[in-house]
Image (tube, rainbow, N blue to C red; front, side, top):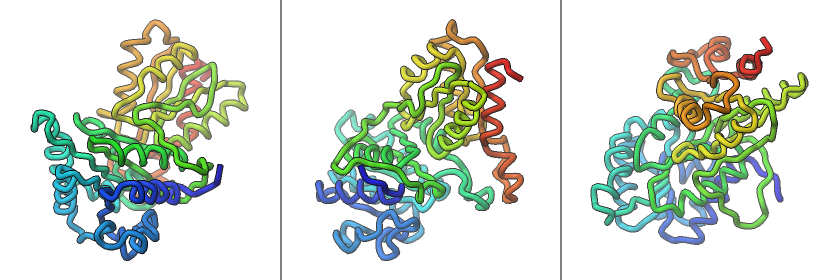
Length: 326
């Protein structure tokens, strides 16, 4: 094993896949000359040249469409959005072209493309640069959506995404690029659609994904001090969702709290809660609770951001509630 930061794990995935398959190329804002807005693509231009590491104008609709056309013709583009907030300019291409092409062509045209970049809040970026779009894209049939929480998962899942024949939305966080973690020395892949139990427990299940896993794991650590044993599940992929891992955990713990940085309506937390009450209702000893973002555009002021987003205190309170401990 070796210890790397999140951005380095992503770069290794890109590097290995571009060396393995000449059809893989990277395109997006500042990915080439500037080495990536978050330095994920550092050094790739030097090795692969401007035909495979392509800087674009600030024109998401245009370069997303070019990438989709390239994928339809046999290439494997990785399209980087500087932030998924900017992907709204291109959402027509992602939703109406990439996700639907296989079905509209009667199974004749695959679109093996990856759309990747940071999502959700990252400090004082204000309302227009802080949206969590994970659940938006997961709502779209024809897409696969991955939201890794650590360097090991990020590398293994990005490699799987690049090799997948379907369009994949791969969502990161500006607040994770410097996070350190161990990854294997050699090549490895992590299958899409398999959740991971990051911490085993017996009293309550917490489900989360992406950077909010930090909150979930920190809350579990705090609760352990009060002898509350928390099982923490990282979904990793939110389309498809690994319901079986969640339901098997709930059958053991009988309680569930779901933590997500999203507005309440139509969240992944809502979907998981529905599935658990449908398939594991008789195992529940308390109502399923969600800890999600406030139903407002994200504020700019730090004290208001703290109020709006999930945090350790809110998760601890929710767990104690389903444990009937106050």
